[in-house]
Length: 199
Image 1 (tube, rainbow, N blue to C red):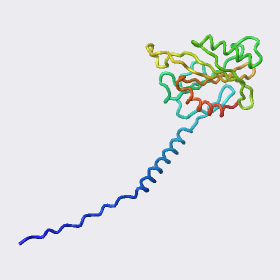
Image 2 (image 1 turned 90 degrees about the horizontal axis):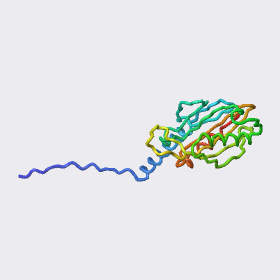
Image 3 (image 1 turned 180 degrees about the vertical axis):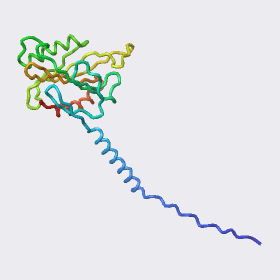
Image 4 (image 1 turned 135 degrees about the horizontal axis):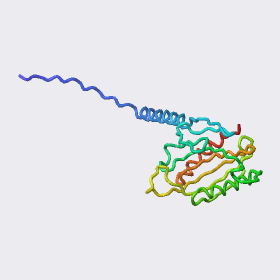
């Protein structure tokens, strides 16, 4: 006598349609891009020295020595972070008997040449900051690593100074970056410049 074994019918496995999987992936990508855009586009406003501007909110503050502000991108080069700084100096400290902003800019460039190693002026041009005359000076120089490692190779840095004169006072907004990151950093600098206003 044989015993018949009853077997249960196998559960039919249903596969999700392929289009649904792709739609979910696309939706997650869109949500990620929106979250990234919101995070990256957050800014913080700073005012002082007769100017105001916005800079990325994730940038961190450095110890400013004789400067009104110095903030930098913590995700850029660790040896020489992309940064923006502001300082205010009397025009008389830049040069004597200077009245025209162009002359002040030339004297400031000469001072940079004395203070910075292997300084090379690349371009000087007039610009407008919130309806006010200004001068932009672009240059390159050799800088030491900010990490303080004396064995580290020097860095070629690129920078731009925007000079705004208010009476006997000169406000200098400086944007600097490792030259290897200069092209990608320029987008951030253009955004900062677009927000720059005289106050």
